[in-house]
Image (cartoon, rainbow, N blue to C red):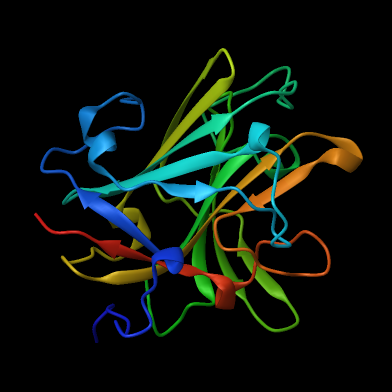
Length: 224
């Protein structure tokens, strides 16, 4: 069974290109030239579809190699960071989504979009990886899931750069050129009543919510 999805409904606003990199790019290579060859996806709206202030905007670029999928977020930062005062990066940090964080949700099986990886990283370099199965009225979360992901981050002036790399061995599937996987990208920023939940593809839930597989767009894996 193929992971390709129908092409006739591809549109610019629901298709994210993952650029092929002949040499694997690590999460820590935040300035690798390969990132500039990837088409950016803009995060400029909240989960509700409302426009977010420019000071919260972000862009994301995806790369893939024979070994892994990588994503880099470049975020504007015009407000105080909301991060742990005592971060650790040796193991996953549950509850990371309660602070500033960037997220990639990716479903590698086209016939099972309700089963997807939740990958997150913070400006501190902290990270978390989970396997999710979302049903109509409940969610199953594999808290012990281990994808082998790595993360890196840099805060410089008014910019936060965050990257994640996840090996295809941990995802459980390796794409081919032209394959499409369902996916969405998110950014959580700020605290209190003004906390913002940005989404590449808005989910349009009544309350802030990202776990809406039917709202996911697509990653298209570019060629060699």
